[in-house]
Image (tube, rainbow, N blue to C red; front, side, top):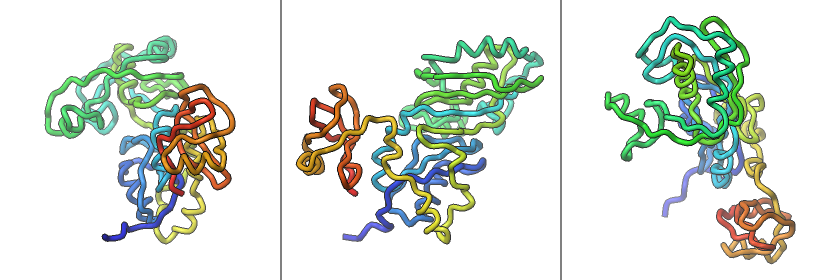
Length: 297
């Protein structure tokens, strides 16, 4: 049996993604630079967007769903006056308007886009339609109606207003499309709009200002990159942590419920550690944890 290529390397590398590269290509370069067996990311960024791309390596990939579910913050600029095929500046203009909203009207409209909202993803998005990606169908000229999806918007506020633009900041949950917010806000205000610039400033526990420049991701800098890795458990910051007993840790590592110290509500998702480090993610069941993902460290 052929040995898998790459090293067993576990943890998170936070990259400050530049515009013009895809999230997939960032992950591929990180994996190559660190010669890692396994890598993935927690939340796609549009190719033209910049900011936090959290790359999980090895066993940290088991924590990706936790970070993907966490709140994220976006700083973005909306251009008023036109709607595009992609809902950002890279697309072709579909419709134009000479109308421009006042700063007060923009502020007043934002309340409709906070809390629990329904959002229709952009036609150029990774949403699947009958097994195919929406952006692939859109490029082929296929017309489609994407279903609205629920989104939690924690906050949305105006940072700066110009005659033809608005700079906003949004904190939202999983699955939010900033481009849809710009499109729908433009329609609500009767002036049309699209995203001109988008930056993810933080994602769960990870911040862009602490990210590695993409240009520095190179195999020649492997030792330095490895020194920038954050531990696997950084991605578990939003979950309660419980300690396994010695016997409990053995049982959990074998996939069985194990005894823990500390408490949580019955059925809560928690993570468990022992003296050696992270043991698992699992469900608390009254003094025991039923493992769902066991870490092989």
